[in-house]
Image (tube, rainbow, N blue to C red):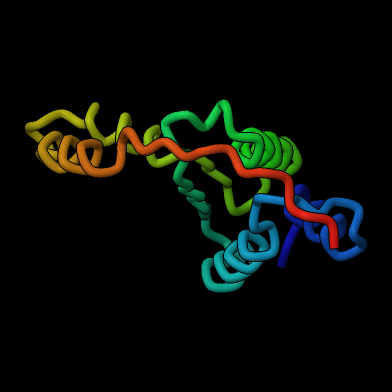
Amino acid sequence: LLQDGWLEAFQASLTGAWKPQHLGLEQLLKHALALNSHAAGRVTHLVYVYWEPANGSKIPEVTTHRAEVAELARTIEDAQPHLHPLSYEEMLDEWISIPDDIIRPADHVNCLRARYGNVKVAPTLAAPAL
């Protein structure tokens, strides 16, 4: 059910060759399997939407997650299902660009940004040694 890049990611996960710290690889693999088994023969898309704080580029966990997402996207390439990773901010940017004559997302997007758009988090301290 998994082919090409998805199979490569699955095998890397299974053997422990690649264990992302902040990307839920196994969950994405489950979704890819489900899409391929329930939509066999059709073009499928898996949209992975994730939240980042406004100061994400200063947070090591966020930058690690970004690198892991980019690595998965490179591994998957054009395999089925097509992977579309994007942050909520990127998704809202896409929504706000939809012409108002189709739907009117601007008010909704503005409310979401007002509530969630400028959240900053403090960098975490290193975990204590066990």
